[in-house]
Length: 129
Ligand SMILES: [Zn+2]
Image (cartoon, rainbow, N blue to C red; front, side, top):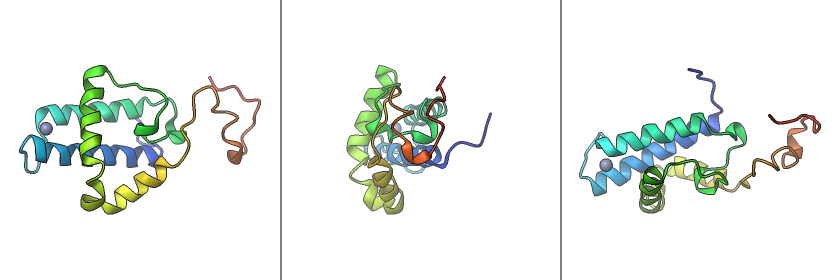
């Protein structure tokens, strides 16, 4: 396994985990550790992030143009986000703020990715495979 994930992905993982924990605590009555279902969701989200085609250019998942979750997980994470999103500012203010800032970046679509990042100063003729 590679450990050199872009820090944005680390933040996104940490944010998702924190949100799921909040959700689980309120909805499934867990105290410290999330329940099996929620643990599974956290693991699943982590795996999706590892496979995310955007990597460092990744928008926050709520903004993403690629919906990569399978339906069951997507439904679960949507409920989590809806509930825990507004509560993040109380439970994890710094993380929430960062996530908010990350979320302000425009979501690239896979096709536009090359031209959408002029600031990166990359070779524009390079094909993204
Ligand atoms: Zn739970």
